[in-house]
Image (cartoon, rainbow, N blue to C red):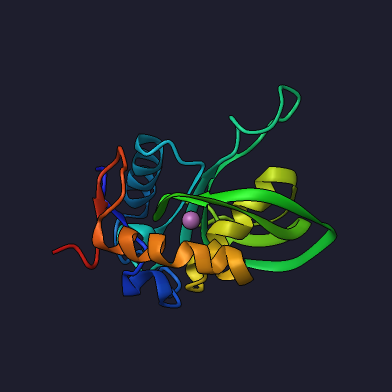
Length: 184
Ligand code: NI
């Protein structure tokens, strides 16, 4: 099932999401729908709050990113916990399906260790780096109500303010289905 993606300004994007309780609803189906919704919008990551569900779940697919030697990862992360972030900070231009038409440089550490469950409730602890780590960091932030635009400062942030208000009202060109909190 393809869900409409919740746009900037919706309170669900600012909430701290709750752990997904084992057996509470069909996890496999939810994860499938999240991948479907992400691919339909040409995204590389999607967090459950972005489809209006305040669960600690995100999906990523970084296999199409980077150069030809880059492998990438397609995976669902259930109730994840970033245990450590390390390596050099590096700048990468981020975007977000909930904030269409805006991209900006964000600085984050290049590596991380994360503990998470997969769809079969097997627990994993793994290290990721490069753009895969970056997508994970971005999506993980969504679970804590943090958006990449929160990291921007000064003039860049000021310039974005009216654009963000417009997005919340649905005044933006986008080629996938969205739900705008302040649409008249
Ligand atoms: Ni995002």
